Amino acid sequence: MDHLLMVPRQLLDHYSTANYTDFINPKTNRFDYEYCNVLVCSIRTSNYNHVPSLSANSLLVGLFSFSSLCFLVQAFRSRKFIGFTIAMVSGCILEALGYAGRIISHSNPCAAFFAAGIYLTLSRLVLTIGANNCLVNPLAFPRFFIPCDIISILLQAIGGSVAGVATGKHDSPSVGANIMVVGFAFQFLTLGLFILICTDFALKTLRSSQASGATDIGLDVTDANQRGSWKFKGFVAALALATICIFIRTIYRVVQLAQGWGGPLIANEMLFVFLEGAMMVFAALSLNLFHPGWCFQNGYEESIPNLLMKQAAIRKVAA
Image 1: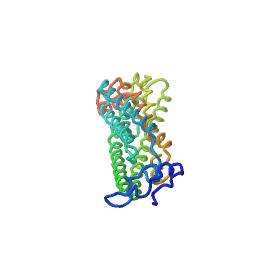
Image 2: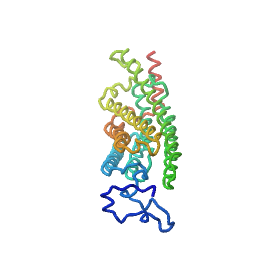
Image 3: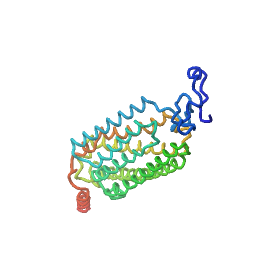
Image 4: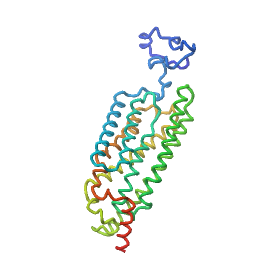
């Protein structure tokens, strides 16, 4: 009886025949949550401490499905950035599946796939603007950050599985939640480092541009026209927006899970929809709007190592 809700009088009047024996499993002769329903069992026995909104979650499923379809069409038309497309489509599909089954799911690590898509495109972005202003070799972005994302995905998935099994047995999901917190915290640190490197690159590029006036001294002169296009500038803005959205979502998830399964954040679906769902929708749709296959018109066919050697030769001649 401890798990049964004190039902409001109007519900008791309507469901006057409901009693404790209605929720006894006939095979085990014990109380069973599977025989509960939202009218007579406490909402705190659910995974989220609230009833997930059908309209909000349906909208998110539709938006992520739409974004996934857009990425596939854009990849087919441009025949470029296949790795980026795989990462973004994987993230969108898993987000859609997560919201479709949100009543029985506990979390999803899909933001890590979105972050991987961003890491894959940044190498090309740095080369287009000028690798000499970047703290690290452009090839280091996917080689370092994507393995970090894989670690984050595994930790979040393991934590979610452990928490799910514990909840299914009506045990405390705190161990799984703690593993998930570690996964999200690791993603937070990885994204934080990524943002610091990008900020340093942007500031150095700005100073280099201002020091050289209207010329492209200090930048990669081979991509001057592309850098000046509104499509390229839009892509830079979309990439920055997507990164910030993923970062906000990660901070929210760390704080939410650190409070525990019964914390106030996990019970607030409005915050969840905005800081989790909407942030990822903004990230996905912004990169649909300014897809790299559409924004990078020049030089994509040349490999990144060749572009690095070419830029080094140009800077050596200029010196």
